[in-house]
Length: 516
Image (cartoon, rainbow, N blue to C red; front, side, top):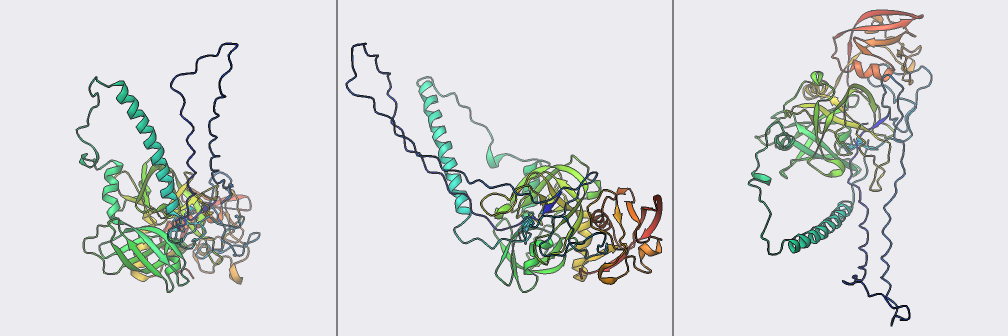
């Protein structure tokens, strides 16, 4: 299964259908039947023919990704323009591995837009153009007056239709009750006067929304998109996806807007391509910031309620709900750009609606604690509104907050990410048999780093890793995602096969600083 980072620009909506011409009103009384020998004075007038209804635009389905065989499907949207590894040659499990093979030529946009999503598809967030979770990194910003106008027009037509229906029902009820007095009952409390309990979706949303922001990222070339982020600390640090802010890293512009309309300029503190996590900081940050509480993603179970906050297709401060539909889902995603490298995660899967623009936003539990960062989506369609951006089909993926918190702290402290590594090159071929250590290293390097963690543990080229602690490993991307849920220095138990026999060994993970 492949994902796309969600993407960002607000697409134009289809134009409203024409209003049909009114047909002549029917006579109150049916005409009296004619006698057999009687001829009507004139033929009845034919009712006017209503105009043909506007045809809704038909968007062909487009396969955004490929599914991985059981037992654990993986999401591998392939970045465009990258070399696809052949045979068993693959990158070191340490960042940066090359994009996974066998994926569609195009990647969905981030919902986050940049969430690419500013793709999900960002996804973009910043970009994410999807897309994988996942939009191609980012559609150019829409022209003023386009996009939302279509949405408004559709809403107006819906309101008129609803209004006409309500008027007809009101007339009928008034006529039937004429002279009998009113039978309506007024509610004692309604709307804003109702007190929402803290554990309800409305209660959680009312507390969390003031601590979320809609991020606008613009590259030096003028292109960019929309994504989401949330307040991480009182110093003004905002956590989001890397693909949301990627366009603004070198000479671009960033801004963050709170639900109350206050807008702040921001700068990138640090970003991690492999983790798809970034931290930005508000300029002249207000003193009353309220960081969102961070939960424990390790304690989340399938079936737990989830609440996602973001700016899908640029619609800021949108709240959707769902459940945790799976845990430890191996996901590889990218923004679809030619120089993009894949991001790997052992993701939380949710059916809460996530679309391009949601990228970087918080995934909350029922108590309002952040349990993940929305990053990518799986989609089978190229989306609507004529943009080619994919939308939610109920398969969204979030970076577990336990991992994202560690990454964010490292970015704030050092400006660069720190990756755990095993010190061996693994094949990125799609398989269900395990992660095979390749016979050749990347760029002529040793497939098993001399004196590295794998070498010290006795692993050799050709070994097939089938488990990491209690996690089943079915492929190279799954192994990478699982290793990156750990910190450098962690000791893990590796189960592997060599010559048809199964073995186990203890590996102390090494470290790699930066994405280079």
